[in-house]
Amino acid sequence: MNNFITNIIDNDIKNGLSIKNIKFRFPPEPNGFLHLGHIKSLYINFTLAKKYNSKIYLRFEDTNPNNINIKYINQIIKNIKWLGFKYNKITYISNYFNLLYKWAKILIIKQKAYIQKIYNNKIYNINDIDKNLFIFKNMKNGKYKENSYILRAKINNNSPNFYLNDPIMYRIINKKHLFTKDKWCIYPTYDWAHGQSDYIEKISHSLCSIEFQNHKPLYEWFINQIYNKNFNSIKPKQIEFSRLNLSQTITSKRQINILKNKKIISNFCDPRLCTITSFKKKGYNSKYIINFIKKLGYTKRNNNINIKTLELYIKNKIINKSPKLLVIINPIKLTIINIPKYYIEWIYIYNKKNYPKYKVIPFTKTIYIDKNDFKDYYDKNFFRLSFNNYVRLKYSYIIKIFKIVKNNNNIKKIYCKIYNYNTIKNNKIKSTIQWVSCKYYTKINIILYNYIYFKNKNIINKNSLKYISVYGDISINNINLYNIYQFHRIGFFYFFKIINNIFYFKKLFFLNP
Image 1: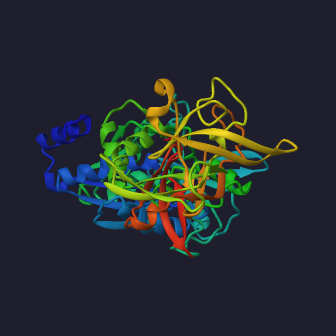
Image 2: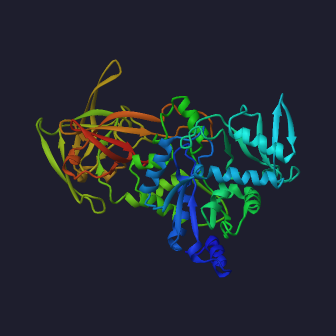
Image 3: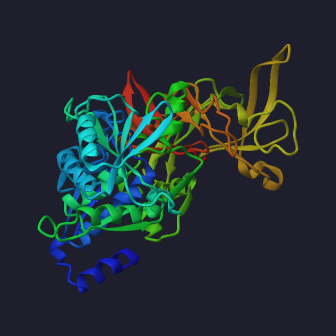
């Protein structure tokens, strides 16, 4: 595994960095669930830690008490374990609030930071060192209201890099912190806390996605201000890699919260989202996801991936391992007139590629087919069941409509005949449809879902989630229950429970079969 990141690290080792001092971290914010984009960062950090036999920390960026939630912390930990990654230690930026505050005061003394007062929509910069220290202490002790004072770094207000325009280091937030409780009334910003936490934890290489490239000069400036060889002789080095951008799915926490507020979704686990938790609940195999990310490689050019690309990758992995079922979603009843009333024929099916190799299903006088496979009039462009069309029943006979009984244009009964393939002139069979015996079937409840937004439109699809009951063939009763099944011409589904002899499935992909 050689790439531009390992080349940088190997070059650092050649220039004197001890391999024992290599260390990485993964720094999630505990204000939502991890999604597919995070998996790339996870994979890169944890794979490099394994390559160099180094430590890696899971560090939560808990600098804003308004955004911290213990359920997100717990879920992130579960997600990382489910993906198979192992970290050496869990840390929190709040562990370092005392030291960050001490270093901020040093910057004030060095005249590298100053207090800014906001009063009556006017801004006043305070340049006196003692006054800055006095106000900063009072900010910490809760003497002032929110948005009345901030601490800024003194860098260059005219810099073309926005992040160097005297960035905010501390702001007043009068809210209890999940871990530090009421101890603090000021909280560090991400840019101030992140790099210093890397330095405190002796992280050698701070890996981040490419959108943080403009933060890098600020990252290095802050560390240079507090660098002390006696504390830690290693300066962490920021390295950017390509971001994983996903289309036709939702990863933005802002968008997800909008959908939650509109009650389109209930939580971050919704199957229409792209969170790791939703992948897990839908029945995805974590190894397939990791291998898919591995194929994307390490680059500085952003990966623009349609969610269907991941689905196709997983589909190709499972297609020959998933038992196939005949399932009818919109049933319509057919009666076969040229077999006896109590006729039953057990059809033995051999699957050359799919599991199981053999299964048995019953064929009876009455069967269900799907309404979408039927028309009560002749249509030369419709090759499924209609007048004058021969159609093959999957694994079974060829049928043709004999008569349709109607009452005020409502179909009451459909009568068909079965035929031997050799008796049909020219053997013109253009379609095969699924079917299920009306007498012997399995009750199945399924969750169907589609994209929340219509393609290329900011319009919500109100029918993106459906709960329906369907009929399935009885072979599922004779198969050791697998996690994933393929419903003929419908898609792949994840089996998750059985209650009162009813099987419950969730759709696995947005993709059709």
